[in-house]
Image (cartoon, rainbow, N blue to C red; front, side):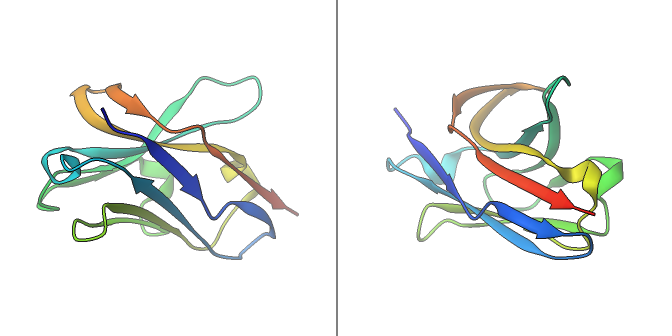
Amino acid sequence: QVQLVESGGGLVQVGASLRLSCAASGRTFTRYTMGWFRQAPGKKRELVAFITSSGGSIYYKDSVKGRFTISRDNATNTLYLQMNSLKPEDTAVYCCAADRRGPFEYAYWGQGTQVTVSS
């Protein structure tokens, strides 16, 4: 069992930066591919980025490439999402997920943290 707790969200202005963190419990964190998803009001949940267990392979959604950076610290069981040059369309609830079973299927999910980008 893995529990995930996100933090770092907030209300910012266009062009600002935020760093989201996802603290994972359990000793198996290092085995898992981890992902960040987001869901805006009235929209489907979408995959923002994922990172494999060793960090050797990373994926980004096209609209965040060059602005967002996913990383992980296996020593502290923490996943990060550095978000720069934020845009209003980045406004959403951001969730981390662990143990990738399919392109959009993960075994464990956090509760999410709200990111609001104001223009």
